Each structure stands twice: as structure tokens, then as C-alpha cells.
Image (tube, rainbow, N blue to C red; front, side, top):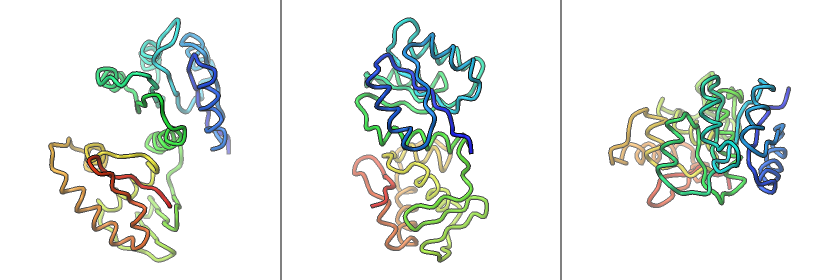
Length: 224
């Protein structure tokens, strides 16, 4: 199977190498660009880039300009990197069609988890059957096995588990879970999620411990 190509765009060579090293370990092919102009040249010449990791602050063309240009022609997944923790920047990113937004400094492992989650959401990675920590989730059959035993999950419990597994290692706020699993905006009532998580943990037995509570935020799925 051909490796998925990821374009890493950052004017800092040290940052590009750090990101590349972690992605290559996960068997991705990484192409580097040191500025916005080079990124656009590579993207439009290669045609088969699966995802772009794009720094905001760069010489010549910044990340926003690169994103605007690419979005005129392509819906390729884009993860923006920025040194700023400014909410306005994050909102601008989502308005431009950015798929994820990560502030520097960040954990490379978290970045890789976000990359894989975005690729699954956009179907670049075949979701089919996912196996993790003794849990086998078959999306086509809508079936879950724990240690080779089928467990009976409701539709929403299945979708919730699927969302957790495809976002392994990522801290997920209740707002984000509601928007992605229930598909409606969050208005301050966390009981819906908390109730489903409680039931899901119970049905998973000892594997329910993989769903960690992050106090004041939400949850994270992490295999011990």
C-alpha cells in the first residue's frame, strides 16, 4: 500500500525535522517546505498530498495566505500550527476551513494523534476495522468485541466509542464531543455525554479504564 504523503510547512528546519521524525515512524511520507511559496509550488505539482501541517508565521506568504489559496482549489485536510494562543486566530482558521489548530509548543505525539484522527475523519485512512487494547471496532458491521466477546452497544454508544478510538491520546472537550457525535452545539449541559460515558465504561468492563476523565474539560481515550 502506498504511503500517505504529508506536507510539513514551517520556516524553522528544527521544527520540520521534529515533526517529520515522528510522522515517518508512523509510516507516512513527509515532504518539507520552508515557506508559503514553496508550499504552494509543491502542493500544486504533487497532486496527491493527503494532509498539510502549516505554520502560521512564515516569510513571503504566511499560513493564512497559503490556506486561502489552497482552499480555492482543494479540501485537503489542513492542520495549522501557531505560536499564538489567540482565540481570534483560531476562529480565523476554522473560517478558512482549517481542520485542526495546534498552538506551539506542542507534544509531537499529540500532533501525530491529531493527524491520524483528521485522516480518519476525511476517509484517507480506511476505518474498516480498528483494533486497540483488546477492543475491536468494526464500523461496517457496527459491531464491537472486547477480548473476542461481542458487546451490545446503543447507536450513540458505538459512535462515542468510535470517536474516542479515532482520537486516541487527544484531550476532548464535552463541546467537541457533542458537536462531533451528537452533531449539535453545546449549550452547557454535560449530562448527555457523562451519562453515555458511564454506560460505555460499564459495558467495556476493565477496558472502560481507557476512557480517562479530564476534570474541568472532558475525556481522553488512552490505552495504558
